[in-house]
Every structure is written in structure tokens, then in C-alpha cells.
Amino acid sequence: MAELDPIQKRLIEEIADIHETPVGAYNFRANSKLAGRNTTANIDIISKEDGTGIDIKIKPGTKNESVHIPVVISASGIKETVYNDFYIGEDSDVVIVAGCGIDNCGKQDSQHDGVHRFFVGKNARVKYVEKHYGSGDGEGKRILNPVTEVTMEEGSYMEMEMVQIKGVDSTVRTTNATLAAGAKLLVQERLMTHGHQTAHSIYKAELNGDGASADVVSRAVARDESYQKFDACVIGNAACHGHTECDSIIMDNGKVLAVPALEAHNVDAELFHEAAIGKIAGDQLDKLMTLGLTAEEAEQQIINGFLK
Image 1 (tube, rainbow, N blue to C red):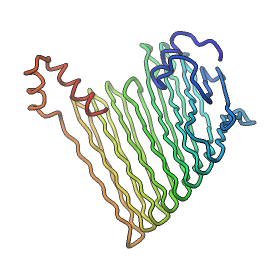
Image 2: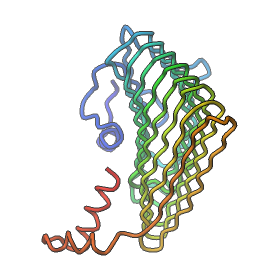
Image 3: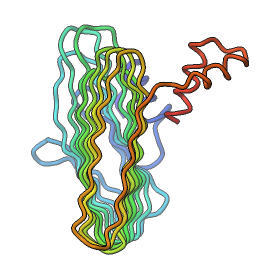
């Protein structure tokens, strides 16, 4: 693996919890260049011929293996779009850790748009973790616009953990999924904005086979002057089960717009949605403050627990 500078190492630790070279397959990208790659007998990583990204191919039956594909940007003014395709073989069970960290100390905007396409084979299981993080004291913005497209075959399962807690000035997060019979999708989003940041989360799940199910849950905190919008749509085209939930804490002058939507095209489709937006309850703060915490410490404890 290429030598990373201290800033790049810190970014990788933040987004992928990597403190040393991981075991298994990985592909590290730093400032638009390949910084390290490893494959295994069951997981291959291949650069696309046009240089726009990588193909990750996981053999059928692969169990208890992982793939790490973090991206870091530590130079101001970099703008890139990367396309990564994941082919997950039947009956496999794997963990995929992605994400992007941007440290911008310059005047120009830095931007990474990652397009991830998943083709999940029959009865395969995937846990996908995507974390976004921004830092740096420059005037340039830190912009991240991830797109995730998921195609799930019969009986497959995918759990997605989508996290953005700090430092991203602008993001549009788009996720589209189509599910065959018996497939199950679980999405857990955790998001916090502050300052003048904006975040727009878009989720669309099409349940096309009997027994398919999708559960999309967002926990979000909007602080200062920041703005968030949550769009979630579950479409039931069969005898299926779908649920969306948005639970947001609003603070200071923050703004949140929740737009849950359901479409039922089958008489046996069962679809539900929930949305709640509110401030931190005063009695919660009072209780923690009686234990010796300051108001600020109590507030942070509540937020940490909410986003956990």
C-alpha cells in the first residue's frame, strides 16, 4: 500500500475505522489515485478499462470475508465521479465498508460523487457501511453526492448503514433498490448537519416479488442554520411489507422537511410510514443535569444516544 500522509490516515480512520492495513480485500483511493489494493481467492477487484472506477466480484458461497474501499481527499479543488460495481455471488455472506473523507484547507471546493451499484445474488447476505466525513478550515466546500443502486435477487438480504455526522457542507444522497421475491432490505441512516450545511436524502425501494420487504429508518439532527430534506418512497408491486421512518431533532435555527411516500400496486401490499420532528425535551436535559452535567454536556449526551 502506498504511504499515506497523516491527514489521509486520519480520514481513513474516521470513515472506515482502519488503523492499519486491513485483512482481506481492499482498495484505497487518495486524491484521485490508487493508494493500495489487495484481492483474495474469493474476492477480486478490477479497474474499469475507462478508468472511471472498479468492479468488485465476490464468488458464490463466499463467507465471513470483507471488502474495504475508502476514498480520501486531502487536496483542495479535486472534483471526481467514481463508478464502483459490486457483483455478489449466490449464497455469500460478506461485509463491505466504503465511505469518503474530505479535508479541505484551501479556497476551492472539493467534491467526490461515488456511484455504487450492487447486484446481490440469490440468498446472498450483505452488510454495507458507508460513512462520510469532512474537516479542514479552508473556505472551499466539502461536497459529497453518493448514489447507491441495488438489485436484489430472490431470498437475498442487505443491511445498509449510512452515516454522516460531521463536516460535509453539501450532500445529495440517492438510493434506489429493486427487490425480488423474499428479498429483504434494511436501511439505517444517521445524519447530523450544522452551520449552513444542507443534506438531501432520497430513498426509493420497489418491492417486486411476494414476501419482499424494506425498512428505511433515518435518525437526524439539524443544528445552527442547517437544512435537511428526507424523501423516502416504498412501492409495493406484490404481496410485500414496507416501512419508512424519519425521526429528527431540530435545534437552533435548523430546518427539516420530511416527505415520506407510499405506493401500493397490489391488494396484499402492506406499507407504513412514520415521521417525527421536534426539539430535545426539557425534562431530558433536566434529568441529566441533576447528575452533574452542564446543559451543553447533557445536550451532547442526548444527541449521541439518538444517533447511536
